[in-house]
Amino acid sequence: MPRRSRPARTSRRLGKQPPRYRFFLNPYSDARFTSCPKCGGKTRVRKLPLVIHVDPAHMIALNKTCKFCPYCDLLIAHQDEIEGFLAAYFGQNQPDVVGNDYLVLGTADRADWLRGMKKPLAPQEALEYLHDFRDYVQFEPPPRWVWVGPDKTGTPASSQVVEEDAAKDEA
Ligand SMILES: [Zn+2]
Image (cartoon, rainbow, N blue to C red):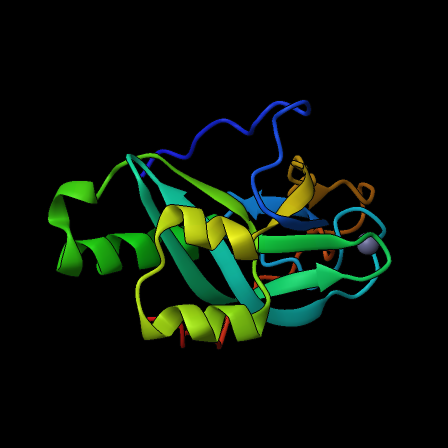
């Protein structure tokens, strides 16, 4: 699924709740960010509902395990996992929507998400619960190999250790 280019910094706020988090939709399937790409600190795991708009007019909340750096207020979600969920969900419920553009709009409070699960939320109703992201950020991948000198073998950069994400509970 193509993702929309990130909205301009001046884009209008959609949600009625205060903005939260800098958001990084991680496109690198081999980087799971156990450490923060900004400050290098160890990231924590935070599970929270991501509110996703899918063209033309679908609004869904995905309870998703993300990486989070409290120091940078940086929330990281993996693009491949989100797209896998969208393809599976719409493939089953609304096949004509599969492949449409989507945009992760922000987060919702857990209580609001649980309430929303009892009946489908209309887009306008979902906006009542939505916390927009404060900002969208992107990172370039680090160099894959680091030159260490003529007498040593090159070793992979250790900053991005590939990690199996055990949490596959969002389906
Ligand atoms: Zn950080």
